[in-house]
Image (tube, rainbow, N blue to C red; front, side, top):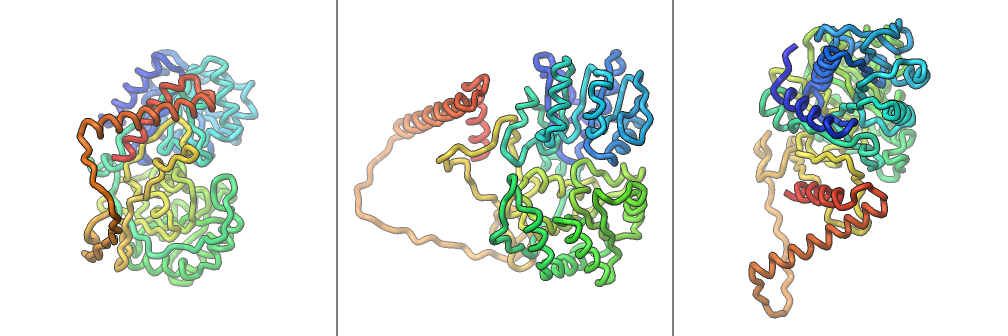
Length: 463
């Protein structure tokens, strides 16, 4: 396989940072080629006599990683239930669930890759990462969305981060598919409690199962905007997914449900039928998100054409991971049907985002970080887009909203450019020392450096 220029740039940037730090996180959008990039690094490290451990969190991702290693002509073994293990192999593909139980019996590698490392907040992941760090291994994390729902930064595991090109750049340069986003309906989530940073699954499932209009809209808009296309539906629970599947079937559309409890053999058969077009709509629960690549699953070039989101979430990471399944390169834009209100909650998928290893919780009493998500939803065709005077899809003209200006008596005071600059500098210094105080309270090792980087991130967000 031949890597792309930006993948070589990421590899070079990672090598440069690893001269000084032993744990680096690589951020690259879904579909940007993280596994291929990592496979190339594995191949190079093996060529220098190093040993490798590549860790994944689901069994189906073992197969995808093995295919990538085969493409790069890499010899490897497994540390995973149901697979034969060769302890003398220089490269291992490991399941997190199996590795945590065999940690002290498994060889200690020189270099450890943590796939989908935004999940590293769990005890299993943390235990494995900390164990190999203590043993002196280099750690490389891979993620399209390096952020945690609880706001805790991934800097607890990684010293540095290398960012790949933005989603918009990858789309404009024909590495990812463009998309058309529609939000025909939004669920009423009034009264739904939040647990562990996201909506309560039980309450949300009950609410979404009773939102029959939403499901009807999903079927109607699938027929209108993407008839006959391969569509993945995201649901809240198995009950919700099975109900949605039956509604699609009743409407004469070939649909099937799949989740983590579906046996691997049956899961493979369903996914192949989906790839072959025998199943048009594949409904799932918490399965076809991080790392899933349809082409790798079936061993041939085939893509997901439509995403139907019926699962509201407060997680930006989960939202982007779901959308990313439909952005693999194809000859026409992906159709994204958001019936969960997630685009209004998190913004357009290709909005430029600044990722950070630091905590992303807002400062208490600081309103400067709070900004409206710049998304406009056409009331005529439900097309979602960045703010504009008219809808790019149907041409609907938006009414200009005028604000009434309240007049009050008072004297106008002239402000000189020098005074403005001085005040701006004063405000900036105040902000900086507030951030230094926060860093010291949180016991960060370099409060001044953290404060300076935090200000850079905030200033870029305001651009």
